[in-house]
Length: 126
Image 1 (cartoon, rainbow, N blue to C red):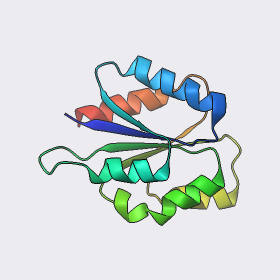
Image 2: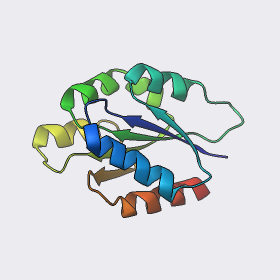
Image 3: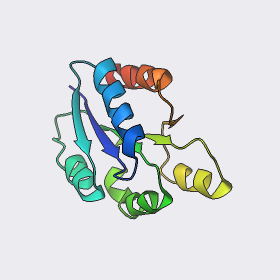
Image 4: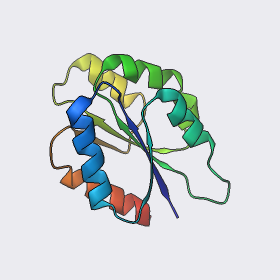
């Protein structure tokens, strides 16, 4: 059974809480591990078992500083299926930072996350 590891930026505030609620509500019965620090995220990814499928890593990142922290640990995530959730405002710098993770899907922070949940459901089946 596939596992989803959710990293929620500690500075995300109410947007992060809404995101967690939406994901847990729309993916019932899914093994979801929530991480609120880069270190716990790295530990969760490293704890995968060889017989298990690769984890799906969802990075909900509100600030560039946390994106940099995650990027320093990128080698840990190299075998994971990475999905990113980022703020709506896009700059060239932020877009470049996001694409350094080679995400399979990039979503924008909103209150619905319909498309994101559809993508995660399809990734769980594959």
